[in-house]
Image (cartoon, rainbow, N blue to C red; front, side):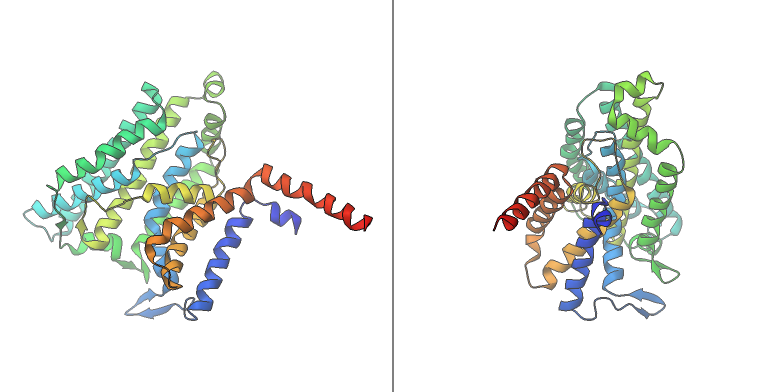
Length: 340
């Protein structure tokens, strides 16, 4: 049992299971999944679908944090990506055509990649601190999205574009399939090739990595591009789900959810160590918590208060110093009991 408790994913997994148990007690039908019109529906499916954008952004954030970085601009990138796609579709001569949706998605993804290149350039070439470099785009990105949409909520009616965020394939929501596909590809590249080891070595000591022959600058640049790519796809999901681009609210605070998911999953903010499976559990925990709070009668606006409490609790449980402090108190109690 002690070995199980010491595993990094024990406490995040236990917390997720407790949340699911609480939801099941409050809503007995929480775990039920039904097929309706050939599609899977249920609370668990809703959590997975709504959590898909957070999971995508968190995947990119995990690799960025593993290199000792941080990307605060992912929410803005998501807003820009959705804005570009919707404005293109709305201004097209054939706004309902599938080809229009494909071109819009391609343009939005390219925009995301360019924004990632910009972040990576500032961090790896210019040498600006990651939090400052990405704060620039975080601040300017929403304004850029507002300029793209002329400050209006741009609505679109395109069935092909709608599939991305609200469609189904083989009874499952497309958003879930995309998120899991990106997760699987990332896991294979990071754990079945040397890429993951290179990322961790850069995070541990960039200068030592460079002296060892590793292109630390290229690795750092690449993870920021990947992070922006994930954020761009997440923005397309959000815009597709609502069939609209809302520059003010699309992807708002999703960067904080992503960071929380990464932290809950056990990835070190000091860099050099990351867990993609932990990030998956963390993202599902964040989304399950967002579902639980209104379910038990607490206003949804209190979400971030509970997230902060949970993060503090998980971080304390994962902290070696906190666990050492708890262990050091046990012998004292034993001695007192023996003396009595």
